[in-house]
Length: 155
Image (cartoon, rainbow, N blue to C red; front, side, top):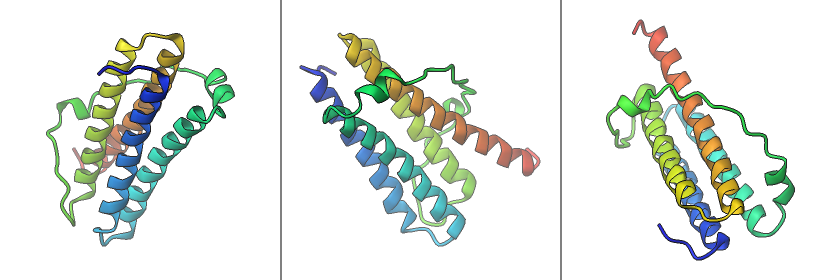
């Protein structure tokens, strides 16, 4: 993917985060159980947080957020890497919802890693490193929830 400047990169990433937030919000409206609805709303809120960071960056308000961002190693337990793609359907199980979200985070992480690899400036690289880190955190969190749930089920 070719971008002419950092603004185009940020615009692209904002659209991806908006799309993810809208997806989780829309499917939360199709669920009947409060626990699943709340989980999906939380996923949407996390994506909106990324969107806000990117919008602040674009507006010149996130410079210190990026400058002070602390990177740390995020373990990838790769649970979603070995799972099949799951399509949303109303009433899907908790396990399926976690799998759906894990696969989405896996794809987002892959996309941002690809964009990081093709970034040309230090500023572009920093933006994508932050996004990679954030997506990796979400992926790990979801995979951990999944593992814990499966262990409770005796798997």
